[in-house]
Image: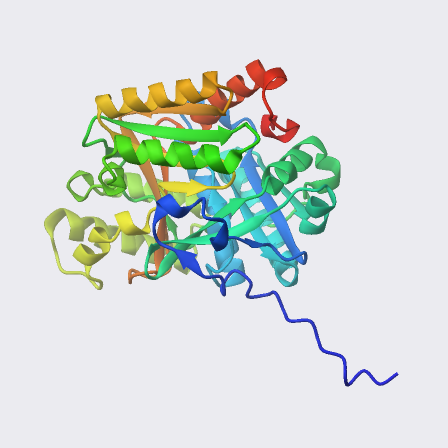
Length: 402
């Protein structure tokens, strides 16, 4: 048969790259910005098993680093930031096109081996086809939120990610990848050279809000409207990244971190990283000239930070006054008692920032934010307790318990 007249289906490889986006976080609930993920994509989930126990043992910085590293190794393997991902504190979720599946698997398996050999932590890695999500009558819709004109992060909705996460954790023999693989030699591009950032307004609130009623869009919109009212329609003031609070770690501490990020301590790259540490620490400490505009880079950190996001759960790390925290608590308790949400709230004196830097120009870096003392993991612990206590009375899918 002559197939010349048949039209070839358009490629979905650049689905995410080609999405239009929005730059007002309050519009995260606007359905017009969301597009259904094509069926030839896959859901990858990584997380540290036993992360809560590790955090309670004081290892929250290591857990946080490996969570962010899941994204950095994928970025290096794929050679692009143009794929949807969500940093969750002790792990990450990423959506990958079928043509990049093997690259993604090898990268995460290398990180899994490194997590065991360098950190003595177990990184769980699972993958599930989007087609299975849709066959289960769940959905995954994707939008782009532009933190600044050149850097965006994904917003996700539809319930499909929670379902996929549950399947991976409940059926590891089917969905988890656990082959022996050579550990990564280094976590290139990833750095944690900034000290924890002290709150400048009161305390750092790490917040998770899961809508549980039938009208989830309306519930999230109400939460956003009420939060905006609490913050007097100025979300920027609760960003935890403040220039006057930013300090570089000591040379010794930075070198200790680099030692953990590299398994080959005789490699050229390792010594290049050590040299970079010395130059950057001394340049910021004594205001010395450097090979990049350090002031512009530092000034842009807040607009390149993922301190607020949405993936069926509203996730925020925000710097609040005691009055604002009390109003937030009253708001969430009211909605919880009305069986409209379950939530997790963790308070700390500082936030943590882990940096993924391709270059120091606008759009060339992103900074993953978590609350101090394992903010997201501790908030998630409270969220899961609420779900278990009230699951019989509210509309929560089983996967929310994962």
